[in-house]
Length: 260
Image 1: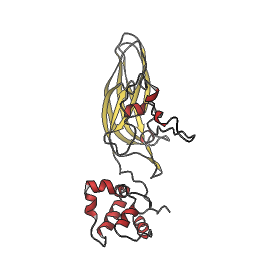
Image 2: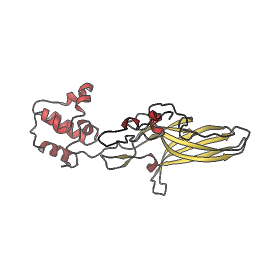
Image 3: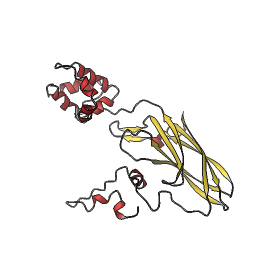
Image 4: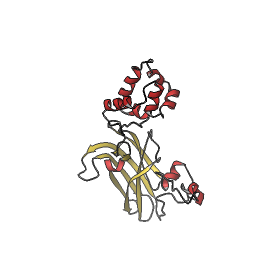
């Protein structure tokens, strides 16, 4: 950050009506500057040394084995070799970050997930190994009310700071899609993303007395608009009685509660 105006919370000050909203959200510190590609004077992890280091031979692979601790199963193994390429002894702090290749929700562009310090003599090299567990890679899913790990492909980054990333690899995390619970306020998009709710909703749209409405959601433009509607609003547009009984019926079929 070079100016006070670069802080992510700056637009929230001085507030109004004696209320100030500190609105960083998840983009705290280096995450904000990475997300907006903002220029910074001292990146997260920045430091000086009287020697130089090389980060090489990065390897990352998916794994699924018990860690024996509270952090859950090991999901990713990471190994990288650090070499002192200078003429003096020195210490290097190595950062391991990760990012989804195709983000499914708004969030940081990269997140620090592990780090280690190594002390090397001139010309020496050492391999560092990291185990990334479920707890390391999980996010809090409000609708599911639990910590979850999204399946998909992820980039693993290794470097000396948040801006000095010297090696990259990719891994795939397997598993079923994360589905939150549905309630009477869930949007059409949330129903379509739910593995059971999707089939329930599409069946209801296909049995609509006024005609099959499933093609309506096949149109990307209409889906973009209708996806943000709460399901009761869509059902009212279909001509359903607005007494909540149909929503309750669909929720029961999807195996969740009506959230009243």
